[in-house]
Image (tube, rainbow, N blue to C red; front, side):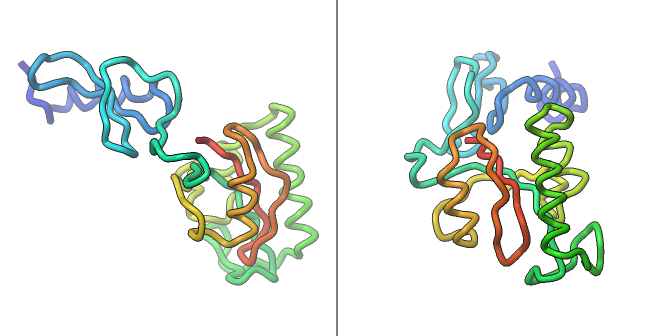
Length: 172
């Protein structure tokens, strides 16, 4: 038998996990040798393969899971990012970029994840814009209000905060 930490087991585990909805891991039971599925948010497990993204089990009124694409401008509270040390674009130019990205996503020319990875001025770009779950009070108020108003799978209109202009995608 293979050790649980062997390279082959890790590679197989990674391949199996990629087919699962967000927030789930496939694991093998030590006692039965059968696969089971772990909700990485709640640490609860189940035998049946999940069909929906993991949730915290709490009311969606309490927590949301979102991704975002941030475009900073010269009036942002910190006009600097991993992409550009000194951001000089105007708020109007930032809005034009955000509207263009939204159009590409809505029209199907690009995915949210592709654009967030390439163009977001937030370090979450390395996670395709994924911010994970958060509750009320964790984000700037305009961002929080927009995120909690979205339905799962819905993309926001441009949202203005002190950080810049955002597109928010509610993922769970």
